[in-house]
Image 1: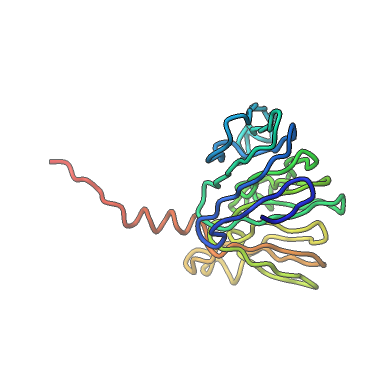
Image 2 (image 1 turned 180 degrees about the vertical axis):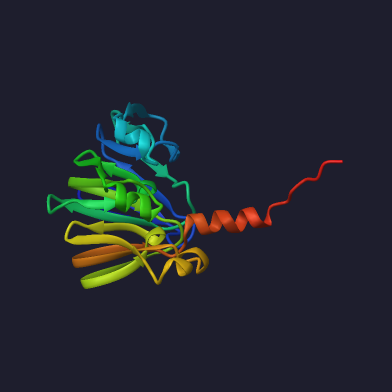
Length: 227
């Protein structure tokens, strides 16, 4: 187990089908993305809270989040993300927000606040991902997940990445959405839009693209014929 002040945690099979296990101290709470609890001790209680707001309606985020409390004694909970991939732990210390793609949030301690940041029509429309990012800030433990493995990049200056590969980035980075080449390349290269980061900060990138996998799976599915 890895010591994280109040909360101990373990990440199993972190490169493929990761599972997060957290020891919740007595009478403490942890926030978990809806539908992500895999197992828990019997004395842990759960409350579902609405995250609400008109912004949630237009994002890919769930309207709800679950709070798990270790009543009367410390307890263990296992958390499984929806997508097969890696789980990353990030410690927030009131040192600026971290921005996540909507599907990236997995769990956090109570000192971490989450809200949706509007990207603007241009960035949201052309990225093809979402009009919103999840803004995480405060003090505490944050866990986020990916589709595939994650690698970190320390950006100084400029860095270009396909929008579908972005998992998270720190507040020191600015970004603009664009394309590689002309419209012919956009339509037929299969590359889509890119995000051009600038400044200084950290960027987390996933090795797989959900949309590319969906298109691949759809092309190989069996189609029943009538008659």
